[in-house]
Amino acid sequence: MHAGRHGGLREIASVWWFIVPGLVFYVAVTLVPAVSGAIQAFNRWDGFSTDIEFIGLENFRAMLDDRAVVTGLVNTLTIAFSITVLQNVLGLLLALGVNSRIKTRKILSAIFFAPAIVMPVVVAFLWQYLYSPFGVFSSIVESAGFASPDWLGDSRIALWSIIGVSIWQFAGYSMVIFLAGLQGIAPDILEAAEIDGTSPLQKLFMIQLPMLAPVLLVNVILSLIHGLKMFDLVWVMTQGGPGFATSTLSTLIFENAFAFNKVGYSNAIALVLTIITLPVAYLQFRATSPKRR
Amino acid sequence: MRYTIRTGILELVMVASAIIFLLPVYILLNLSVRGAEDNSSPLLPTQHPTLQNFVTAWDAGRIDWAMFTTVYIVAASVLLLVVMGSLASYPLARMTSGFSRWTYMLFMAGLLLPYQMIFVPLYQMFSHVGLLGGRAPVALIIFYAGHHLPFTIFLFTSFLRIVPTDYDDAASIDGAGRLQIFVHVLFPLLGPITGTVIILNTIFIWNDLMTPLLYLSGSRNLTLPVAVYSFVGEYASDWPTIFAGLVLSMAPVVVAYFFLQNKIMQGFAAGIKG
Image (cartoon, rainbow over all chains, first blue to last red; front, side):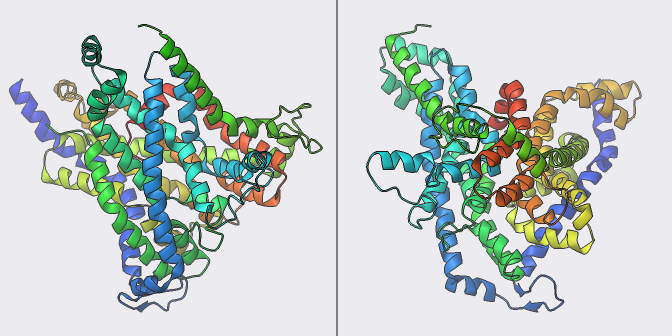
């Protein structure tokens, strides 16, 4: 048996070619364009002429003077951090509520999660209506006797209107991950605590929250990355407007490449986004990888 | 399990939250069956529901064609992902050589790379080799199959590592070839994770807007998100017709969710991708 096992392991080397089809696709579709994009970030190029000029760090220097990029960077970080806080607080509250003895817990968790699987385009158009002058938000504010703000047209609140939609869509996603963590806590620990007369609040802060630390990390990273890459909701609801009030790095990458024909510049912005995302994505990979031996 | 007064209050609060949560969806459905002459509040149930909006949206948005295009692109991409991903994960999970470790790290690097970095150069590559325009659906399939592969390999490899090697050893003693062992012995054992791979990739690809919006612009073969996007542009603020279009385009995924909710929620709870 021992010999057979070793024979099996040696023989497995003969199947290295199983990797080849996937590797070809992956290299062609991900690695080659990534390297080519990183190179283009140091060039000036309109995307179609043969006139490509190496300009060193000029694209990056130009970003500092570009009000759109500076605003877009601030917006991207604002979205990422506020979503991370609000979506996780709401997600945790929902998870705690659902992870209880209530009879409707199954259907409620299915309801809270549902928006996460709906097309972002559909969500964006639906909320564009809800935020419109005939939508519910304006009529609620007006029926209370106030003038309703222009939810997506006022540059001071448009970004927050979009953040609200994203939280509505993905709070249930955070909930599902918290729920998996809560259900992983051995019931005996909680029962023992109850017998000892621990109050529900003590139970939450002394036992459940500390034990949720690993899933909290996963959730924080997921929402950070999601926020940093935000495109669909913004593109459909405001296209980055009014002005640049809701521009994100992703919408600017899209616009610079395909509306302004500044492909080199667009890739430079993408490189900045990559550098911001990379450490977070690395943490995500470490946090979700199964421990090897 | 005791059901105390406190539990009852919690239940009420949670149900009330769910109702508030569902309000946007209620308005979506409520307005999608409403005639143009009805100007009452979007919160009031529609008095004379009509399916006319759905007929208009179906024809004007060419929803049938978009659904066919989307199913074709999703099915081809997911098939490629399952075949290439499961095959690659076999040596990646079993071999202990440096080659396998480095290849695995190379694939995983793809999980770290934000899509935005490859977005523009990839468009140029496809345009350079003439795969845009009429053949753009093929470009999308190649893109999705390569782009979601790291995630797919991650899932398959993690799963295969906990499948004991006894299975392949026993089969190899019987003299079966490696490909046969994989197809007949190991692939069936991968069933649960294959399900997760199919579900998650289907939802990601089905819902994607950014790439098809770019690749398919001006094409006749629109995917659902792009069809909805351009359809809303045409119908400006005819919300009931727009909403009927939105309901039609989200219906397949929502129906699938209705039947597979546990499996889908578990898949997402594996929580690698945002």
